[in-house]
Image (cartoon, rainbow, N blue to C red; front, top):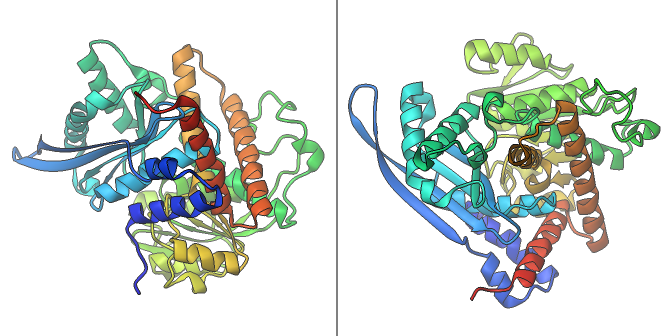
Length: 444
């Protein structure tokens, strides 16, 4: 029987599994299996050549029991409603795992941004924003960047929404440029949060990671450092080998941060191919090579790999940072790693999860490992509401505190119940959302 690869059905399977473990009431379980609100829009955009082209976009608000909905908007040719539903569900659990007062949402537009000019992308973004404007806002649903969207995209959304309202509303999105209310540290947040969870996982495996006395200083040693793990001395990941699938924002920055902490990045890939050098890659040079050529392939001193072959490289830490359904029942037996740190959303299927647990490979699930982005988005939102902005050091200190605490919470839950880390994370998150629903009750 073929493995189910529909992302929303996978998300529901993950929920169903923990509902039984939590003895969740049937009504609450059923409530949590479906999105609260879904909006599908079909809209025209004028292209550079004067033609009118029709696009389809989605915004799904999964659950708002714990606060306003939160989630990115992606531009991709394979966007589907079921994908957006799944991503919105995962955002619901992600915000609950790290304990920030948000619900979950997600959005997407079916398009190929690689084939569109900046003008076309701006017009698409502004029209899509106008279409979904009735259901977003700083108190109800706050979009953010995702696949093939960035700070500029968020600036267009913020401006369009503000023009509709008649006054400036910077809190309608996060991930904005600094000049219009963005937060320091936001661009690196997803990767930095992933690095913190990897380091905690390596500590559990007795790698030489940190100096305990330095860790206990709690970011109070040096006013000028960025509190990214190097206060004083120690905090290094001692020669752990790393492979990264997906060399976009999250993947390339994760590779950079891990390399800076002493890890040896030996393989990376993008959509066009992968490269490997078992002696280690100079990550900054690879980033420069990709900026010039459009791909990591062809970098001097490396062997070429197919994009998915990077998943099968022998390493201590594998970082899938591309799209969902990359590690499946078909290729999971080929993995040769100790830790899978999911910088992407949904890269591992349930069947692969079971096999990895049996093989004693620790999976740092997406709703934990890549939660740094939404955590610093929350910081940006808070700073904007206060009109008081923090230093990058403050942002990174607070991020580290939340990621370390969240890893510890998930690890304890998984150990207590003898389950894998994903199940532990889901048990923690679903219980928190269910408790919020219980206390709020059902209207009317």
